[in-house]
Image (cartoon, rainbow, N blue to C red; front, side, top):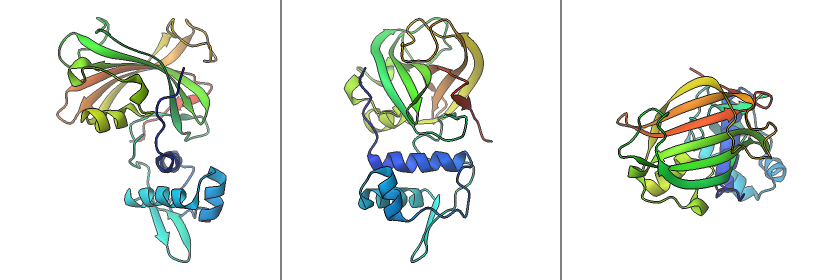
Length: 232
């Protein structure tokens, strides 16, 4: 089960900091460690770390003071690749990653809300982790009208990022419906609970800028590892 294509290292660092800001683990006015110390902790070159900091500065989340250091200036709603990703570790934050379980094209399930046009969709099943801990199993249905084929090897850890980069499809908002459903029969053995175990489920309707639903996803998450958070 290969990993999806990872985000560039500098973006992974920026996203991790952004999610820590959203979770309140980093607050406005906090000073980050010295750049060389941060780079060593992340296992990257200083240049890569500085590129991540520049990305955070461009998002308005960081103030870089010459001769003093780097200071958080973000609020509760930082933007970024995972701005719409609502699962985080129980302790807050956590960098999302994904392992693809299967990709196929199939008729749209009758039990899902209507989305897109036509009868066919791409079905993507994944194991999602937060900072390396298995947190959820996920099934995504993308209407085939937005893509004739789906290249499994090209999928990014963030599908929304992949959609923008490869399909010119921009997901700008989502409607989440929270419930509880048994884990599906395709739940991988690497997930800490077997198929059939009742789990919290997020049914998401992902929408384009004009309000059209392009994608439906079902995400069963482990409440012992992750929590669903929507900050308003």
